[in-house]
Structures are given as structure tokens and as C-alpha cells.
Image (cartoon, rainbow, N blue to C red; front, side, top):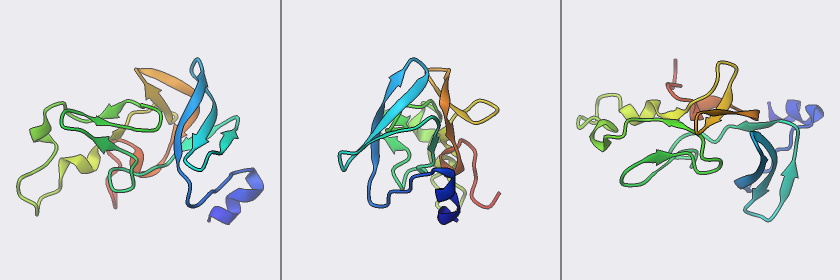
Length: 129
């Protein structure tokens, strides 16, 4: 599947991680990686997964998206993040970033012009549904 994206100009860099980016207003200009690489593109995709893959992070008082600071749909009340009965579906499994109807991420309620989110990072993207 990834190989089919290469002719479209998609860069796949295994073993590296985007740490952040440089913005010009609502437009992402470039991203910076842990290996010291700067990547520029006209369009970007946020597909980082949720908690276990590092797409979302949690502190004692909030859940956040660590790369761009995208708006996350999650309750403020920490007691609502989980169900005490481990056999039940866990609420945190539905947390994720908020987007516009066409998939652009929101940051402080404002749409990023050229960054869309796909996959598990999306709010309410339940596995198997």
C-alpha cells in the first residue's frame, strides 16, 4: 500500500518522527523530524494513531495532540476517560483530533489549510466500525 503512494510524491520515512512544524498563518510550511530532517510540502497528512503510537498524549489534567497542538475531543473530567470495568469499551478509545467536514485539522478552532487527519487519530474513529 505504501509503495503505491510513492509515485504520488508521498515520502515514507520509517524510524523517524515529526516533532513539529513551521506555520505561516493557517498554512503549514514545513515539518521537522527527530533525525534533524526538514520536509516541505504543499499538503500534509496527520496519521499518528492514538495513545499507544504517540498520536495523543495525556498529562494529569488534559489530553493533547503533541505534534501540532490540534484540537482534541475529550472530556476535561479525568474520571470520564475510562470505565472502571476493564471488560467494557473504554471512553479514551474514541478520543481524537477534531477536523472540518473535509478532514482539515482544527487548531484553536481554526482549520489548518493544508493539513488533514486520517485514521485512528480522528475523534470517534472506533476500531472495527
